[in-house]
Image (cartoon, one colour):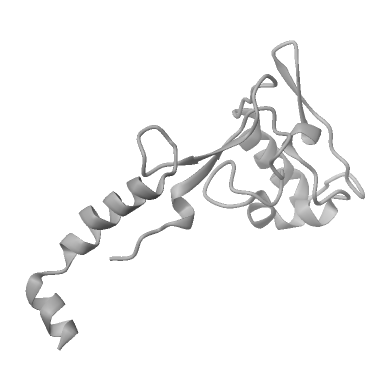
Length: 136
């Protein structure tokens, strides 16, 4: 059994001040630079943070883009898809971004919980026969 250790961490967005808009897994299954490569190529500030792209004011989210040129043609429809994806995401200007560990009910990573997870899911998967065979 393989433990998806890296994918067991997700970013919980607070004010968006510590999370890259394009380069981190904060929404969906992949980074936005991989989901929307043509739009990413048009981006001037590829290291921009969520807080710089999505400004929450008065309960509304306003987007501020920094394109080399306005998206057109196929990139225009991709831009619509990007807007639709990120528009449903809300963030809180009063808290910081945090990493959450999905393998713990409270979201906190601890070595003790990791050790328990390994004991429960990995060591239990090996029978005593396989363990003895591996030693011999």
